[in-house]
Image (cartoon, rainbow, N blue to C red; front, side):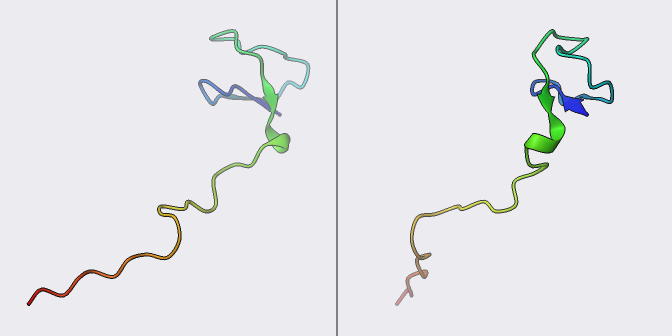
Length: 53
């Protein structure tokens, strides 16, 4: 299976090299992860909110 990195369409034909809709070179779907598993939102430890007096 091959996927277009621009429009994210998946093509079952392994002989295709370019997307039929936008002409972008296709990439092997098995070679890239399906989704990002972890997203880091901050660097280091999260800060605790300050107590108001």
